[in-house]
Image (cartoon, rainbow, N blue to C red; front, side, top):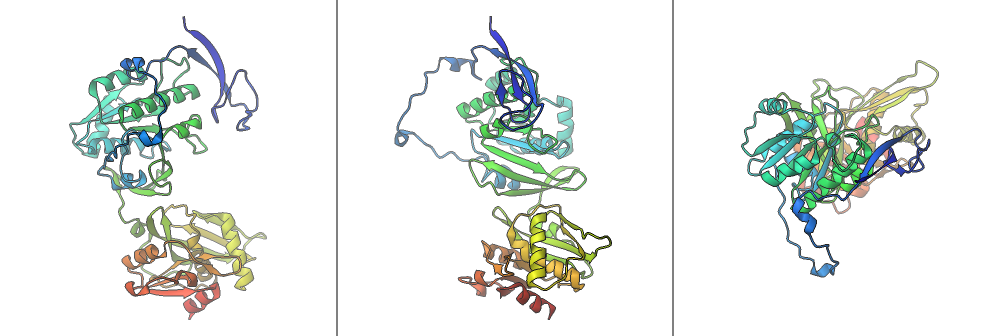
Length: 455
């Protein structure tokens, strides 16, 4: 008989305790401990024959055999970018996002597009008929995509041994359960155990595995925090369900950069790649309005031109309002203080509203200059020409500081037809301006930029 015992797990961080406690000593949350049954028995590997394997022995790192494995390139250029150049064999990728954002649609679309590889799509949430209906809407035909409706990891591994797929997709990790754990599916121990089994399968067989994960109301991936530590790559699928555009961010990547960004457009035929996001982030205006400027930013290796919108008006009530969407509110207050102290603007009795168009959240300090220009434009009710853009960080002394990779920002502005770009004077050192057709204006202080614009 297997020895069965119970243990208590924190539903917030996954910490384990032998008894119930009110406050988690690990994360400090209250009333998060839940009792779960744990069955202690000898676990079999994902492949039954591997139980007779000889234990690994340590060897010098110089003697470790290493073959450069080629990545699997999909037809989705955005996914290739966020993964660092394609799917790495033997990698474990976790994709999280809100319900209805398009996670299942994206992964089924990827599974159907890999026509030269055998893909097993395991669905624990939808039936085979529902998955077929989704595939029909996508309009992609594939004879190498296999669908399995199963939630038991032991049954899934039996089918894997028979089919031997090249890529495995699991939708979702919270619906799987292992017979080695007595708790219900979706619990802390079940999610951890099922992920560990899939991780062992991926590393031993060299098969890439994609896991779709649910998120909590706070926006974090459901389950223990160790889940994100176990996987190789964590992708966050973001966006408003009422908007057409979706953003995929990399929060962890052992095989590439963690600052990459992929942009999709949701349509009736699935998710479409947005190859030039700057064009969709810039609104097509027939008239020139005050308070609107264009800033050059970077998301990973991708330059983007975004539209910054400001509205400055006299405060109706006693306390002026400060509101920002897509931009750090504390940084906005800092820039307003700089404009009042160094620029002589009386903004203390003004309501200031700031918006980054397109639903993006920007943390790049290079759009400081664009934000300041937008606020000045709205305050003075003077429109800035649509052919002008900005790239510069603003310091507390009112100086314009240099930003990184200025050439990429200038090239993106030139490609979209901008005629003038304002940058820091210190960015011009070593910059070959002769290869650009756009007029490059270098300034050291904010007042130099405003004098040039207003004149």
